[in-house]
Each structure stands twice: as C-alpha cells, then as structure tokens.
Length: 116
Image (tube, rainbow, N blue to C red; front, side):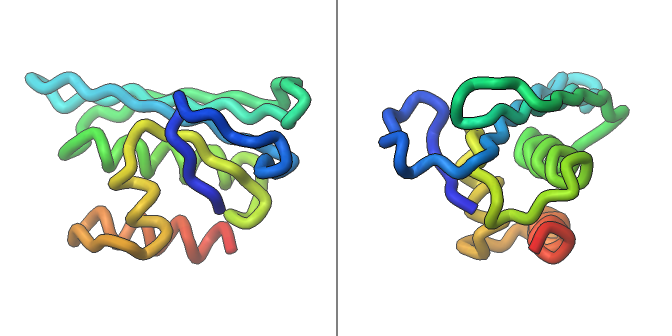
C-alpha cells in the first residue's frame, strides 16, 4: 500500500490500478461519526463507493481506519493492490506499522491481516 496526501502531486507511474479515497468526520459533542470511501481506476472511472454512520468513535483516526477497512473489505482487495489517499497520516502510519496506539493499533493490524 502506498500512502499519499490528497493534495500532493503524484507521478502517474506511481499509481496502482485502483485508488481509494477515504474520509471521515466526527461530531465532537456526540462522537457520532460519518465515513466514506470511493474507489476509482487510474483513468478516473469510479468503480465503487460506500458510506456509513457510526454511533460513537473515540476520535477521527479510528473513523479513518474504519473507512479504509470498509473499502478494502467491500472490494475484496489486498493492501498491495491499492493506492490509498487519506488526510490522516496517523491512520496510514498505523496500517504500515510505523506507530502504535492501543485500540487503533489493533484495528490497523486487523486491516493489514485481512487485506494482505
């Protein structure tokens, strides 16, 4: 899996066949969270998209991880098949194994195992 900031310029040769865009937002007062994802080919064709609402998450990184997991599971894809765009560098770092945050780390490891 490659991680790229959504507003970075990426050479076309760097792109894998499928590109996942994820985002999440969390209401600070209630913890209610919305998350979404979209998959497109490197030619720009949107293949699939999904969204969900979660009654409570502890923070937005958790929601970003849930969005990534949802996209990969819906596609039946492996991490190596995807280029993932997320504005959460913590979520990407967790999946790649660069950081550990208790519960977050467990979800990130789960994503890595399910999608490898």
